[in-house]
Amino acid sequence: MIKLITTKVQINSEMDPSNKHTEEYFAARIKALQDHIKENIPSLDNSPLLQGFLDACNALNAAIDSKKKADDVLANLKKDKDSGPAIIQKAQDLDDACNQAIETMWKCEINAGRLALDELDLASLEASLVECAILVQSTPKGLAEFCANDETNACLVDKFLSNSEWMKLMIRHGGASNGNYGKAILIHTKLLAQIRDSSTEVRHKLALAVALEFANDIPVFHDNDTFIDPIGRFWHYVKAYENKELDDMFEHFTIWELRLVIDGDATDEDYQWGRNYLKAYRPDEVLRSDYKWKYVWAVRSDMNYHHPENDFSNYKELLSAGGQCGPRAWFGRFIAKAWGTPTWGCRQPGHAALTRWTPDGWCTDLGVGFALSHWTENRYNGGKPSERNGLDFEEETKARMETCPFEYYQKLTLLECLAESMGETIEYIINPDKVWRSLSLVQRRVFAQQETDNHKRELEADLNHSKPKVNNKKEEPFQDISGCFIIPASSCTTPPSKSLLVMPSFLGGDQIHLTCSAYMGLNYEDGSELEYKIPEIIPPGTYILSCHMVNVHEKQVPLQLTIEHPGDSDTFVDVQSINIQYTVGKWQHTKGVRVQLQPDSLLMFSRESPCHGISIKEFILEKS
Image: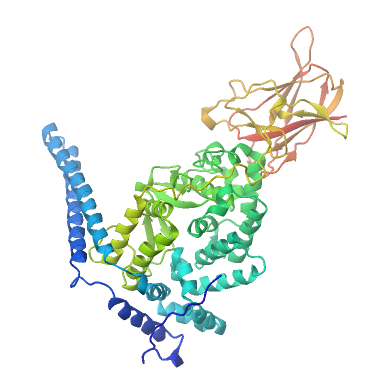
């Protein structure tokens, strides 16, 4: 629960309580806090260690500038046909020396930064730093407008600003999106009231994650006029978690990590569909142990690199349509978040990709590494868009994973609050003009380069989402209670291959998956038969044959059925075409076809290329 601790700030004449909740009042409050902070922190005039750090900053920037010039010289020489190997080698040596200089200066920078940080004690300024950072990010105008919208809003702001524990709670976990603390505390208050009589640790973490992230409206995918309901998003993930539908690691994620789960632009209905479809269509992707591709393998197995085959306005239609880098990245982020795992969307030169959490650290999928990645975030940045580069994001993930939350807050978050309080906006590289922001970058790098066991969170042995039991015994045809004969799809005589996958099914037993013809460069015209021999338990006669299957593509080719009977010569007596309807990821039965069978008849199913994947549980024979 939030403990009430009042921040003691002297109210001067400019902060007239009768003029409370106005832009002028909040501006004066910021000024009073800033003056108090400045009086209690080192300055360049009285801190040789701080000056030494700035000297190291300038030296590092000079080395970086030299490297850029060396890069240009080397690139121009390589373009010049008249440049000989000797001069190019000298330019390369110079470029290598600049790299070495940068590496050396970074070490000096970190050492100088550590010395400066050692003399900096922000604990006594904690309450002032947190409040000032929140007021700066909220902006006097933004807070005044929020208070003016509703009388209860003004009361809520008073309650928030007088409760240092509540403020610290929000600032510790990344702060409100775009500094919109008014909306964040409004959402948080509503959610805390709804779970007052049924609170759990996960519910409290989710409530704060949703409040902070949805302080900035999130539009629905392909519908910029409709926005995700934060209250609905909270309850969607609460119910999914409590119904054991999400990844095992969900309950262990920090609030900062949960923000990267619940921030998706899909509707809650689409997220529910995403989990249901994957369990039906590709249970092997749910059960995958490799977190780099767990849940998201569909972007390679079912979303081939081509122009979309159909229009789409939601993620169900997107999976069917396929597409190039953009649609594939969109779907990958969507399906990972549907299962409760964090992602950070990223763009790369001429490309779209995604990054995601794994137990061993964050990784990139569908593209190159973090060095060429960037993404627009909703972090407060002085009213300017925050386009974050990938290496900066990766370093923060490492720092958070390798550092205990209390130490991260005390040594880094408060330093970032100091930078915010002094008007220093976000930087991704050392900037001598922003000493506190630069020191925070040094502190973060120190944390990121630690080698600890903090990030090693225990993985559960059993899947929360009811792991299917492995069926060690091969399934055989049988007669069900209705009198129909069931031929399990996994009972085929065809051995598993790249085009035929056998896997445990969430329906029980096994199921098969016939892969997309473009997957792994397959060509189904070069032998794609799926064969079944009719056993003696199935008497001779005429039957209606249907298929229990899942299909996620609007454009799908039929199954071609050829039936051979035993006799003096192998002559097929019947050829049927089974249409595969678009089931939108749900189990359905195909329309039946009439077949004549006898013991030892051979059923052979095939498909023509190109074709998409299809999953089959069983074939049903109903006496005609």
